[in-house]
Amino acid sequence: MDSSLFVGSAVRNKELLERFGMIGPALVDLAITHDMGHSICQEKNERRADDYGKELREGKTPSCGKAERGNLSNDTNNVATTSPGNTPR
Image (cartoon, rainbow, N blue to C red; front, side, top):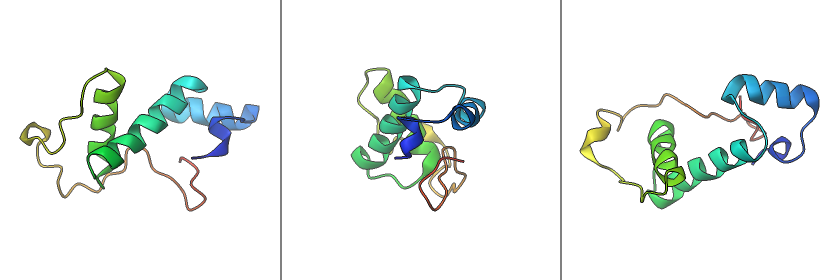
């Protein structure tokens, strides 16, 4: 996880706010549930991990691999991407 999620400068907080529309605990929750979506569902796809994270934030059990997700199995579009230093872009 990017350390600026926990202790960020004003400039970094502005970047995060512009990119994700939130900072502070809400963004930490988003990042953690997104990563949990990867782990719980053993999912490599970023879009699906976001969907599973959203389900977790809503208090639901992720519906891993459900057909209603559409044709995302080969989708490589990154929703929450990170740079080599594990810093969200």
